[in-house]
Length: 208
Length: 126
Image (cartoon, rainbow over all chains, first blue to last red; front, side):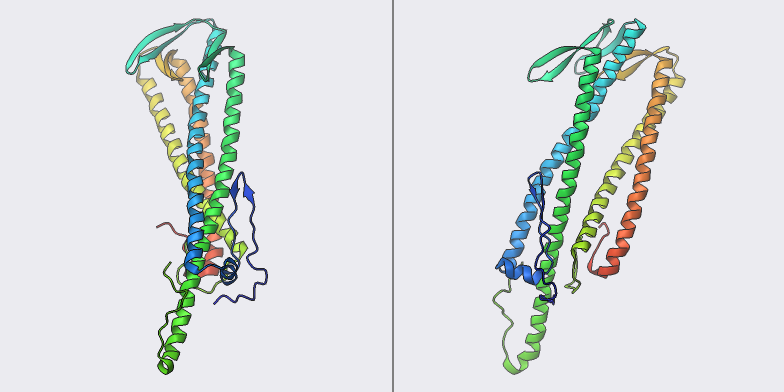
Protein backbone atom coordinates (compact mmCIF):
# COMPACT_ATOMS: atom_id res chain seq x y z
CA UNK A 1 0.00 0.00 0.00
CA UNK A 2 1.15 3.48 -0.67
CA UNK A 3 2.15 4.92 2.65
CA UNK A 4 0.00 7.97 2.91
CA UNK A 5 2.13 9.70 5.48
CA UNK A 6 5.49 9.47 3.73
CA UNK A 7 4.78 12.15 1.17
CA UNK A 8 3.78 14.97 3.45
CA UNK A 9 2.97 17.39 0.70
CA UNK A 10 -0.27 16.00 -0.53
CA UNK A 11 -1.00 16.25 -4.20
CA UNK A 12 1.38 19.06 -4.94
CA UNK A 13 -0.18 20.52 -7.99
CA UNK A 14 1.98 21.54 -10.92
CA UNK A 15 -1.05 23.11 -12.47
CA UNK A 16 -0.37 25.76 -15.01
CA UNK A 17 -2.41 26.66 -17.98
CA UNK A 18 -1.67 27.48 -21.54
CA UNK A 19 -3.93 29.43 -23.84
CA UNK A 20 -7.08 28.32 -22.06
CA UNK A 21 -6.04 24.69 -21.68
CA UNK A 22 -5.98 23.85 -17.98
CA UNK A 23 -3.08 21.80 -16.72
CA UNK A 24 -3.73 18.33 -15.39
CA UNK A 25 -3.13 17.74 -11.73
CA UNK A 26 -0.27 15.43 -10.94
CA UNK A 27 -1.06 13.07 -8.10
CA UNK A 28 1.80 12.47 -5.69
CA UNK A 29 -0.03 9.96 -3.58
CA UNK A 30 -3.22 8.19 -4.52
CA UNK A 31 -4.46 7.63 -0.95
CA UNK A 32 -4.20 11.31 -0.08
CA UNK A 33 -5.71 12.31 -3.39
CA UNK A 34 -8.68 10.05 -2.80
CA UNK A 35 -9.28 11.34 0.71
CA UNK A 36 -8.99 14.93 -0.44
CA UNK A 37 -11.43 14.47 -3.29
CA UNK A 38 -13.95 12.97 -0.86
CA UNK A 39 -15.25 10.74 -3.65
CA UNK A 40 -15.60 7.04 -3.95
CA UNK A 41 -13.00 5.43 -6.13
CA UNK A 42 -15.37 4.79 -9.03
CA UNK A 43 -16.61 8.37 -9.03
CA UNK A 44 -13.08 9.67 -8.85
CA UNK A 45 -12.08 7.57 -11.84
CA UNK A 46 -15.11 8.80 -13.72
CA UNK A 47 -14.19 12.41 -13.01
CA UNK A 48 -10.65 11.92 -14.24
CA UNK A 49 -11.90 10.13 -17.32
CA UNK A 50 -14.22 13.00 -18.10
CA UNK A 51 -11.24 15.31 -17.94
CA UNK A 52 -9.44 13.05 -20.40
CA UNK A 53 -12.38 13.19 -22.77
CA UNK A 54 -12.29 16.98 -22.68
CA UNK A 55 -8.59 16.98 -23.46
CA UNK A 56 -9.22 14.62 -26.36
CA UNK A 57 -11.86 16.98 -27.71
CA UNK A 58 -9.51 19.94 -27.59
CA UNK A 59 -6.80 17.80 -29.20
CA UNK A 60 -9.06 17.06 -32.13
CA UNK A 61 -9.79 20.74 -32.57
CA UNK A 62 -6.12 21.66 -32.49
CA UNK A 63 -5.23 18.86 -34.90
CA UNK A 64 -7.79 20.20 -37.37
CA UNK A 65 -6.24 23.66 -37.07
CA UNK A 66 -2.82 22.15 -37.61
CA UNK A 67 -3.96 20.36 -40.76
CA UNK A 68 -5.43 23.60 -42.13
CA UNK A 69 -2.23 25.51 -41.54
CA UNK A 70 -0.10 22.75 -42.94
CA UNK A 71 -2.17 22.85 -46.11
CA UNK A 72 -2.06 26.65 -46.26
CA UNK A 73 1.72 26.93 -46.17
CA UNK A 74 2.44 25.05 -49.44
CA UNK A 75 -0.35 27.05 -51.08
CA UNK A 76 1.31 30.33 -50.20
CA UNK A 77 4.64 28.96 -51.34
CA UNK A 78 3.07 28.09 -54.68
CA UNK A 79 1.76 31.66 -55.02
CA UNK A 80 5.18 33.06 -54.27
CA UNK A 81 6.62 30.78 -56.92
CA UNK A 82 4.22 32.13 -59.54
CA UNK A 83 4.92 35.76 -58.68
CA UNK A 84 8.64 35.05 -58.84
CA UNK A 85 8.20 33.49 -62.28
CA UNK A 86 6.28 36.50 -63.55
CA UNK A 87 8.95 38.77 -62.20
CA UNK A 88 11.68 36.78 -63.93
CA UNK A 89 9.75 36.95 -67.20
CA UNK A 90 9.40 40.69 -66.82
CA UNK A 91 13.15 41.06 -66.60
CA UNK A 92 13.63 38.89 -69.71
CA UNK A 93 10.98 40.82 -71.60
CA UNK A 94 9.11 37.79 -72.85
CA UNK A 95 5.58 36.54 -72.51
CA UNK A 96 4.63 33.63 -70.32
CA UNK A 97 2.71 30.99 -72.19
CA UNK A 98 0.76 28.70 -69.98
CA UNK A 99 -1.80 25.92 -70.28
CA UNK A 100 -4.45 26.51 -67.71
CA UNK A 101 -7.56 24.73 -66.57
CA UNK A 102 -10.72 26.47 -67.77
CA UNK A 103 -13.01 23.98 -66.16
CA UNK A 104 -12.34 20.65 -64.65
CA UNK A 105 -10.47 18.59 -67.21
CA UNK A 106 -10.57 21.31 -69.89
CA UNK A 107 -7.42 23.24 -70.61
CA UNK A 108 -6.72 26.22 -72.79
CA UNK A 109 -3.63 28.23 -73.62
CA UNK A 110 -2.95 31.68 -72.30
CA UNK A 111 -0.33 34.23 -73.11
CA UNK A 112 0.50 36.42 -70.16
CA UNK A 113 2.16 39.56 -71.38
CA UNK A 114 4.89 41.25 -69.50
CA UNK A 115 3.25 42.57 -66.40
CA UNK A 116 4.02 44.71 -63.40
CA UNK A 117 1.12 43.60 -61.30
CA UNK A 118 -0.99 40.70 -60.18
CA UNK A 119 -4.33 40.56 -58.43
CA UNK A 120 -4.48 38.89 -55.07
CA UNK A 121 -7.64 37.37 -53.71
CA UNK A 122 -7.89 38.74 -50.21
CA UNK A 123 -10.96 36.84 -49.21
CA UNK A 124 -14.40 38.23 -48.32
CA UNK A 125 -15.05 38.72 -52.05
CA UNK A 126 -12.26 41.24 -52.41
CA UNK A 127 -9.50 41.13 -54.98
CA UNK A 128 -6.81 43.77 -55.09
CA UNK A 129 -4.18 44.59 -57.65
CA UNK A 130 -0.63 44.65 -56.37
CA UNK A 131 2.69 45.36 -57.98
CA UNK A 132 4.87 42.27 -58.16
CA UNK A 133 7.12 43.46 -55.36
CA UNK A 134 4.20 44.32 -53.11
CA UNK A 135 2.57 40.99 -53.86
CA UNK A 136 5.75 39.15 -52.94
CA UNK A 137 5.98 41.15 -49.73
CA UNK A 138 2.41 40.45 -48.76
CA UNK A 139 2.60 36.76 -49.58
CA UNK A 140 5.87 36.46 -47.71
CA UNK A 141 4.28 38.11 -44.70
CA UNK A 142 1.35 35.70 -44.88
CA UNK A 143 3.77 32.82 -45.11
CA UNK A 144 5.72 33.98 -42.06
CA UNK A 145 2.50 34.46 -40.11
CA UNK A 146 1.27 31.00 -41.04
CA UNK A 147 4.57 29.45 -40.02
CA UNK A 148 4.58 31.33 -36.71
CA UNK A 149 1.01 30.26 -35.88
CA UNK A 150 1.89 26.69 -36.76
CA UNK A 151 4.78 26.80 -34.32
CA UNK A 152 2.55 28.12 -31.52
CA UNK A 153 -0.04 25.50 -32.35
CA UNK A 154 2.51 22.70 -32.20
CA UNK A 155 3.63 23.94 -28.77
CA UNK A 156 -0.01 23.99 -27.64
CA UNK A 157 -0.45 20.44 -28.85
CA UNK A 158 2.64 19.32 -26.99
CA UNK A 159 1.38 20.90 -23.79
CA UNK A 160 -1.98 19.27 -24.31
CA UNK A 161 -0.46 15.86 -24.95
CA UNK A 162 1.53 16.14 -21.73
CA UNK A 163 -1.71 16.76 -19.87
CA UNK A 164 -3.26 13.75 -21.60
CA UNK A 165 -0.32 11.59 -20.57
CA UNK A 166 -0.50 12.82 -16.98
CA UNK A 167 -4.21 12.07 -16.88
CA UNK A 168 -3.73 8.61 -18.37
CA UNK A 169 -0.99 7.79 -15.89
CA UNK A 170 -3.21 9.04 -13.06
CA UNK A 171 -6.08 6.84 -14.18
CA UNK A 172 -3.78 3.82 -14.32
CA UNK A 173 -2.36 4.58 -10.89
CA UNK A 174 -5.72 5.13 -9.22
CA UNK A 175 -7.02 1.97 -10.82
CA UNK A 176 -4.00 -0.06 -9.78
CA UNK A 177 -4.17 1.35 -6.30
CA UNK A 178 -7.76 0.17 -6.06
CA UNK A 179 -6.87 -3.32 -7.31
CA UNK A 180 -4.07 -3.45 -4.81
CA UNK A 181 -6.33 -2.37 -1.96
CA UNK A 182 -8.84 -5.06 -2.80
CA UNK A 183 -6.16 -7.69 -2.91
CA UNK A 184 -5.00 -6.68 0.55
CA UNK A 185 -8.54 -6.74 1.82
CA UNK A 186 -9.11 -10.16 0.31
CA UNK A 187 -5.99 -11.54 1.93
CA UNK A 188 -6.90 -10.17 5.32
CA UNK A 189 -10.46 -11.33 4.85
CA UNK A 190 -9.54 -14.89 3.95
CA UNK A 191 -7.15 -15.20 6.88
CA UNK A 192 -9.68 -13.84 9.30
CA UNK A 193 -12.60 -15.56 7.60
CA UNK A 194 -12.10 -18.97 9.25
CA UNK A 195 -12.71 -17.53 12.66
CA UNK A 196 -15.39 -14.98 11.78
CA UNK A 197 -16.87 -16.17 8.52
CA UNK A 198 -17.67 -12.84 6.92
CA UNK A 199 -17.88 -11.81 3.29
CA UNK A 200 -15.52 -9.32 1.86
CA UNK A 201 -18.11 -6.85 0.71
CA UNK A 202 -16.78 -3.48 1.49
CA UNK A 203 -18.98 -0.52 0.85
CA UNK A 204 -16.58 1.32 -1.47
CA UNK A 205 -15.94 -1.73 -3.57
CA UNK A 206 -17.25 -0.90 -6.99
CA UNK A 207 -16.04 -1.92 -10.37
CA UNK A 208 -14.55 0.99 -12.19
CA UNK B 1 1.80 4.05 -21.34
CA UNK B 2 -0.12 1.88 -18.97
CA UNK B 3 0.99 0.42 -15.76
CA UNK B 4 0.02 -3.16 -15.07
CA UNK B 5 -0.37 -5.21 -11.91
CA UNK B 6 -0.95 -3.22 -8.72
CA UNK B 7 2.62 -2.40 -7.92
CA UNK B 8 3.89 -0.43 -4.99
CA UNK B 9 6.27 1.78 -6.91
CA UNK B 10 5.77 5.46 -6.19
CA UNK B 11 5.46 7.66 -9.23
CA UNK B 12 7.20 10.97 -8.67
CA UNK B 13 6.79 14.19 -10.61
CA UNK B 14 10.17 13.51 -12.17
CA UNK B 15 8.99 10.11 -13.42
CA UNK B 16 5.87 11.73 -14.77
CA UNK B 17 7.95 14.26 -16.64
CA UNK B 18 10.06 11.49 -18.11
CA UNK B 19 6.94 9.68 -19.22
CA UNK B 20 5.65 12.90 -20.78
CA UNK B 21 8.91 13.39 -22.59
CA UNK B 22 8.83 9.86 -23.86
CA UNK B 23 5.30 10.40 -25.12
CA UNK B 24 6.33 13.56 -26.93
CA UNK B 25 9.33 11.89 -28.52
CA UNK B 26 7.24 8.93 -29.58
CA UNK B 27 4.80 11.31 -31.21
CA UNK B 28 7.54 13.19 -32.99
CA UNK B 29 9.00 9.89 -34.14
CA UNK B 30 5.80 8.99 -35.92
CA UNK B 31 5.56 12.45 -37.47
CA UNK B 32 9.13 12.12 -38.69
CA UNK B 33 8.40 8.74 -40.23
CA UNK B 34 5.58 10.32 -42.24
CA UNK B 35 7.61 13.36 -43.21
CA UNK B 36 10.51 11.18 -44.31
CA UNK B 37 8.19 9.08 -46.43
CA UNK B 38 6.84 12.19 -48.14
CA UNK B 39 10.30 13.65 -48.67
CA UNK B 40 11.49 10.37 -50.21
CA UNK B 41 8.51 10.31 -52.54
CA UNK B 42 9.18 13.88 -53.64
CA UNK B 43 12.78 12.99 -54.26
CA UNK B 44 11.83 9.98 -56.36
CA UNK B 45 9.33 12.04 -58.35
CA UNK B 46 11.95 14.67 -59.10
CA UNK B 47 14.36 11.95 -60.12
CA UNK B 48 11.74 10.50 -62.49
CA UNK B 49 11.05 13.94 -63.91
CA UNK B 50 14.69 14.65 -64.69
CA UNK B 51 15.05 11.23 -66.31
CA UNK B 52 12.04 11.95 -68.51
CA UNK B 53 13.57 15.27 -69.47
CA UNK B 54 16.71 13.53 -70.71
CA UNK B 55 14.60 11.28 -72.93
CA UNK B 56 12.35 13.93 -74.43
CA UNK B 57 13.04 15.59 -77.78
CA UNK B 58 10.95 18.63 -77.10
CA UNK B 59 12.70 21.90 -76.55
CA UNK B 60 9.86 23.44 -74.59
CA UNK B 61 8.08 21.44 -71.92
CA UNK B 62 5.09 22.15 -69.72
CA UNK B 63 6.20 22.83 -66.20
CA UNK B 64 3.68 23.21 -63.43
CA UNK B 65 3.99 26.48 -61.58
CA UNK B 66 1.19 27.13 -59.14
CA UNK B 67 -1.95 25.81 -60.81
CA UNK B 68 -0.95 26.22 -64.44
CA UNK B 69 1.39 24.45 -66.83
CA UNK B 70 3.82 27.03 -68.08
CA UNK B 71 5.74 26.52 -71.28
CA UNK B 72 9.34 26.57 -70.17
CA UNK B 73 12.50 25.73 -72.15
CA UNK B 74 13.93 22.33 -71.32
CA UNK B 75 17.24 23.69 -69.98
CA UNK B 76 15.51 25.96 -67.52
CA UNK B 77 13.32 23.15 -66.27
CA UNK B 78 16.40 21.00 -65.80
CA UNK B 79 17.96 23.69 -63.65
CA UNK B 80 14.84 24.18 -61.61
CA UNK B 81 14.47 20.47 -60.98
CA UNK B 82 18.10 20.23 -59.94
CA UNK B 83 17.56 23.05 -57.45
CA UNK B 84 14.46 21.36 -56.09
CA UNK B 85 16.35 18.11 -55.73
CA UNK B 86 19.04 19.81 -53.65
CA UNK B 87 16.40 21.34 -51.37
CA UNK B 88 14.50 18.09 -50.82
CA UNK B 89 17.57 15.95 -50.25
CA UNK B 90 18.83 18.44 -47.67
CA UNK B 91 15.45 18.32 -45.99
CA UNK B 92 15.51 14.52 -46.03
CA UNK B 93 18.96 14.49 -44.47
CA UNK B 94 17.84 16.79 -41.67
CA UNK B 95 14.80 14.63 -40.98
CA UNK B 96 16.91 11.47 -40.84
CA UNK B 97 19.27 13.16 -38.41
CA UNK B 98 16.39 14.19 -36.16
CA UNK B 99 15.00 10.67 -36.28
CA UNK B 100 18.31 9.23 -35.08
CA UNK B 101 18.47 11.71 -32.22
CA UNK B 102 14.83 11.07 -31.23
CA UNK B 103 15.45 7.32 -31.20
CA UNK B 104 18.56 7.76 -29.06
CA UNK B 105 16.67 9.90 -26.53
CA UNK B 106 13.83 7.39 -26.43
CA UNK B 107 16.26 4.54 -25.73
CA UNK B 108 17.77 6.57 -22.90
CA UNK B 109 14.39 7.23 -21.32
CA UNK B 110 13.47 3.56 -21.73
CA UNK B 111 16.46 2.48 -19.64
CA UNK B 112 15.55 4.98 -16.92
CA UNK B 113 11.85 4.12 -16.82
CA UNK B 114 12.20 0.36 -17.19
CA UNK B 115 14.94 0.53 -14.55
CA UNK B 116 12.52 2.01 -12.09
CA UNK B 117 9.19 0.44 -12.98
CA UNK B 118 10.35 -2.91 -14.40
CA UNK B 119 7.39 -4.56 -16.13
CA UNK B 120 4.86 -2.28 -14.47
CA UNK B 121 5.28 0.05 -17.42
CA UNK B 122 4.99 -0.62 -21.10
CA UNK B 123 6.73 1.68 -23.53
CA UNK B 124 6.44 -0.47 -26.64
CA UNK B 125 4.06 -0.04 -29.54
CA UNK B 126 1.41 -2.69 -29.70
